[in-house]
Image (cartoon, rainbow, N blue to C red; front, side):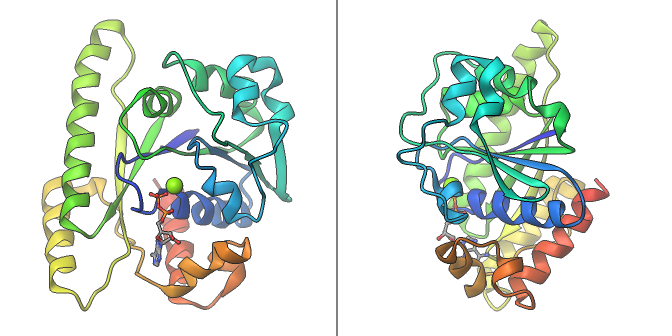
Length: 243
Ligand SMILES: Nc1ncnc2c1ncn2[C@@H]1O[C@H](COP(=O)(O)OP(=O)(O)O)[C@@H](O)[C@H]1O
Ligand SMILES: [Mg+2]
């Protein structure tokens, strides 16, 4: 299964979700491939890997899908990563799907960390994915971003219906939740009302350990195992497996 993490808004928690959900699921025994698809390369940096001078990145597979495997970096026994850096660019929407076709059968899950844009890069993530995860940061603008993204997906679905590509399903994950904040609670309430069962029950709290962990090159579960953030990602992984 290929899952894309998407939102045109930066700073909503896409990379954090990719790193920590991937770490938890591989820790639970799944073979996971993380794919960075943001030219900023933050996912690699969060694992303590510098993508800037890497010989192979996802571009290797975009230009020749038979070579995608050459770009795979081993992070943990069941956890691999393909890097991205500022050289990432695409000219058509099917390139990422083609690049992953040659490696996806080696994994239970491929998790793509998307860019903060609504352009051809994001179209590549959508086309390559079987299902999308949209982080909803509990902030009014982020809520609008989710609405925009979903209506764009629906329009895309209408066009795709004619070309026989299925409309993409999606789930929403509430990120950076501060329970003491009334605005946060209001946004959570309206998201659950509007999107119902598409919203994960587990929500990720605002938690300093989550922000500190990537500065040490670690997922929060390895950085501070008993933090609120680590517990939340363990719960999220459990709920995800039942999806
Ligand atoms: N639940 C959280 N609690 C505290 N800080 C968080 C949390 N989630 C993300 N962050 C921090 O917020 C910033 C933006 O998150 P990031 O995952 O990079 O967003 P995006 O990939 O959507 O741009 C990062 O510095 C990250 O460490
Ligand atoms: Mg990111």
